[in-house]
Amino acid sequence: MKLWGGRFAGNTAEEMAAFGDSLPFDRRLADADVRGSLAWAEAITAAGVLTPEEGARIREGLGQIRRELAEGTFDFQPSDEDIHTAVERRLAELVGPVAGKLHTGRSRNDQVATDLRLYILDRIPDLRRALRSVQEALVAQAEAHPGVALPGYTHSQPAQPLLLAHWFLSHFWPLDRDVERLSEIRRRVAVCPLGSAALAGTPLPIDREALARSLGFDRASENSLDAVADRDFVVEMLAWAALTASHLSRLAADLVAWSAPEYGFVELADAYATGSSIMPQKKNPDSLELIRAKAGRLLGNLVALLAVLKGLPSGYNKDLQEDKEPLFDSLDTLELALKVAAGAVATLKVRPERMAAALDDLLLATELADYIAARGVPFREAHRLVGQAVRVALQRGVGLRDLSLADYRALSPAFDAGLYGALDIDVALERRRVQGGTAPAAVAEQLRRARERLAAEPA
Image (cartoon, rainbow, N blue to C red; front, side, top):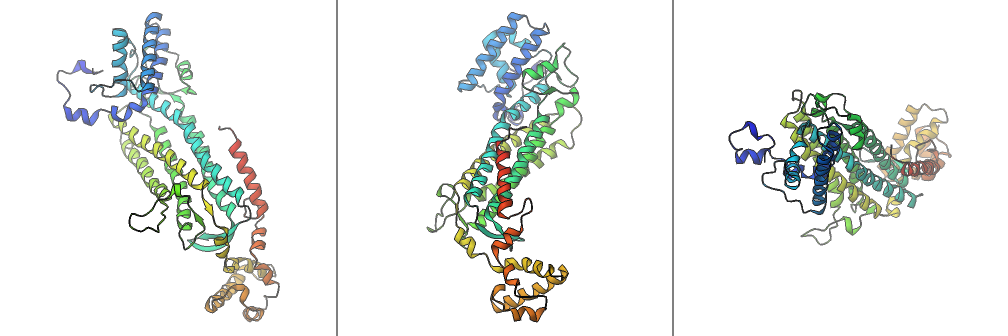
């Protein structure tokens, strides 16, 4: 059954059907499609298109279809070119010719736009929960290791000491921004295009605001031509997914490095690692490497849809069928990646002794520069002098604490015996008491704020 066949004398070529039919991927919109049809049946009954009896029969048939879809007993046919055709075909089998009245005043253009928005609205709570599960794991690890220090890195080089809890929380906050963005995007997804018809709006006296509310939308769309062509909300979801995946990727990149024996800072649980088919000793961080790699895939999905949209004329074009596969793939991939990340972080074994062993006192060079700057030496000059001290220590193969006071005073009389008090990891950490800093008290406050965020209701 073609919904558009009256104009055509010939059949669709087999290869054209294979090329153009969307049922293989848009069938996951089935429940949204039935819900939209139920709401439309109510609306056109109120508008007088259907009698109350006809409206009841159609709603009963749609209810049966919804049950069949939920139970997995719905019988898709080779002639079903998309989910809309499949539902309408089955409805006719159940209730007879009156099924043909359901599409009055409605187009597949506004129908598919409505389905897609409903589908995303259904997915957002699950995605938010998956995000929160990673955040929960990060906070739990931070709380479990309050006093553990390790080197912080810039340019992949040891820089300054940090609390491990501070590092865990540094990955909490990007994900929290992702939660916020998801709520912001939801407001733009929750706009109902149903009633826009093909492009000019339905001719039926439909209360579109009431129709929107009945489907769980916040409001109805403002312009019918825009509504059927708008895929900004899909682009935003793809951009959000790509950015969230990039945040997971950066978390994974650190943990991949830290799990190597040369660092040995952490060890993945067996459940989130794999072995080698040839080297029996290997424990590979495949979960993290796949998280890192899939960020590129999600970025590709975003670029693919933008390339489709950038040259389209006004109104609906069949090109828009290419919005679904990248969307479905990105949301599926990201949700699974979030679950894997949450599990990997929650079960991560931390090795504080390896982190402590990596705390070379060269990490305290800035503390030493700050010390003599506080004694009146301009910081740039202090930076130069401490750089010279670092060079001497490296040449001798010793630490900054191993240089004698005479060694320091040979560089500048600004150095005195008090400098050794500055070369202390705990002192260096404690000095970073500013909000957002790595001092124990600042991190404790940051943890409190993180817990508040986790307890907050979504916007």
